[in-house]
Each structure stands twice: as structure tokens, then as C-alpha cells.
Image (tube, rainbow, N blue to C red; front, side):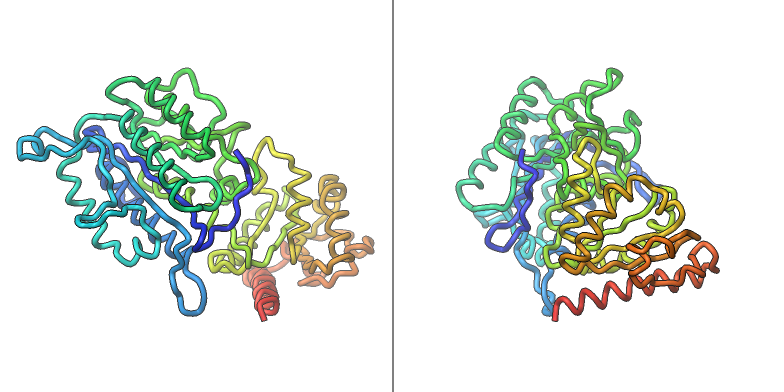
Length: 430
């Protein structure tokens, strides 16, 4: 699969499909942050609402706060037809379109419409819930999703590859090998499959993506792992996962267990990663020693509002996925950067990695194209004796490193960094 993910536009939106197991097993409970258990279907509905809210935020542009149609969503549920609904005369199919409102013909819904009319769609989902909790026709669900993806490819020119989010316990009524074959066929058409295995057990490490299934995993987990796509290297998806501190093994797949509602919501929003990369944002590169990671974390706290507002795209080596060409990624990030923040300390100056991999590219970019360099002195060092660095005006004096200050004074310096970067963003947009 290509790792090129162009920015979605109203003319070429991102296509996201949802394929959700609504069979009887989904009535089992799942933990949530309130401490009270709720069933898996309700957790899905709440996570879907979070997804719509976040997609709407990422698609809001301009001073008018208008929502642009940057995402189109369709959704299927498989597992309708519980015994009571059959007795009451519901003879509908086992696989149903979750976003097809009564009287309408189209159910691929743009995010502006879905957000503006969410109460209608929520009510529709609640009505459909009365007929859920049947068997688990997973094969039919994948057949419906595959057909829909093919039809959408004929109908609209979408940006990048479509994304299919699958939520299930991985226990189909029959033919799991057929499910795996259908998923492989879908992935062969450049569709990225994100797979969530719902369970009440702990079979995987939290926020950890595996490159191979473990022999101890149950059959359902192994099937859900098999249908998942590999995490595309150097992509919005790997960046999103790094931001939320997920660990990715080499050839790690987009598969995780779901036994907490918070993880379901977080992992579901992974599908919006291509929207997170804002082409109008100011690119900010942070160079630091891993011995000083706490200062990176504190700096990120002050810059987080600028990231959330889409003003900056913040890059550090935490965004490098395992198995990727790290030197090429650093060079690419520096070539794109408009600002470089250097967290200077004795550790920084002693780092061979920084001296050999980062500083030469950084200094060349500053000289050749005007990269703005903002040194922040986090600890005592010999920076005064390093002419190529001491020529840049530091945010704070080398006589007053952050680790020698009171907490309030440290925060004042880091807030000054954030204010400087905000002002640079505003200047570039004039």
C-alpha cells in the first residue's frame, strides 16, 4: 500500500467505512472511564458519536466556522434478527445499512451533514438496536462492505485509500477462512483495514500493536489480527499512534483488543489521521537528547493548544515508527520545518545521534532557506564554546537553565516559546 496520504479536500474527501458486529455477543459489558459497565453496542454508539464530533472539528475551516465535506462515512451492521424481533414481524436482512434514513436513497454521508443532523442518525441507530443481537453473519458483512467500497470507487474520486474500520469478537457463524479471504481481497484494492477485537479478557499489552499473532490468542483474536492491515510507515496513522504513545512492532498491524470504551474511542478516531495533517500548519521540529525527554513532554504541553487549533504540526523523533528509515524521516521533517526548537543541555551536546544526524541538516537549512532556530537551555552545557549553535539567540540565558529555575519560571520560558511560535504562525499567514 502506498504511504502517500494527500490532504482530503471537499472535491476529494476521505472515505471511511464502518463494519460493526451487532450480534448477541455485543450485549456483553465493557469497562468505561466512569467505572460502570455498559454493553458493547452502547460503547460503539458513544465512540461513533465521538468520531463524528472529532471529524467535524477537523473539517471546520475559516473564520465562519463552516464544516467542509472532507470526510464521507458509510456503515454496516451484521447480526440483526434476534428471536423477539422475528416474532414481532421484523423479517429484514441480517446485514443492514446503519446510516440509511427512512425515505432516503443515499447513505454515504458527508461529515457536515452527519454532524449537523446527528440527532436524527442517533435516533435511527437506537431504533435499529431493537432488531440487533442476532447471529454473526461475518461473511455477509464483509461481502456487503466489499461491494460498497467497489461502488464508491466508481461513484466518487476519493483522496488516498479508503479506510474500513471493523469491530467484532471475530467469531463468525461459519467459514472464518472465507472472512480472511474477503478481507485480503479488500486490502488488495488499497483499502486500509483497522480491526478491533472486542473481548472481556486481557490478551494483549495496552496500546501495543503486534507484528505477529501470539500462539496463546483465541481464534477470534487471531482472525481479527489476520484481517488487519499493517501500519503504513511514515504515514498519518503512525504519527497518530506515536502521539498517543502506542508501541508498534516491526510490521505491526492495525489490530487491538477492546475491553475499555476509552480505547475503542481512541482507536476508532485513528481513521481520521489523514485529516490531522494540516498543510497550512507551521512545521515545528524539536531536537533533544532522550536523557532530557521530560523537557520535551513539558514543551509539548505548552504547544498542544497550537497543535489542536491546527496552527502547528509538531515533529519529534517520537513520530518515527519502528522499522522505518529513521535518517530519511528526520531529513524529511527538517526539510519541511519552518522552526526548530533545540533543547540544549550537556546531554544534547554529547549526543552523537544529534551531532551526526540532526545538526548538519538543521544548520544547513538555517543558512540556506532561513529555518528559524529557537534554542532553549534546559541544563548547564558548553554551548558558549560551540559557535555554530551559540550564534542563535536562545530563549533563555545559558546562565539560567530550566533545571535551575523554579517551576513557575520554567513554565514562563516554555510559554514564551509557545507565544513566539504562535506569532510566527500569524506572521506567515499575513
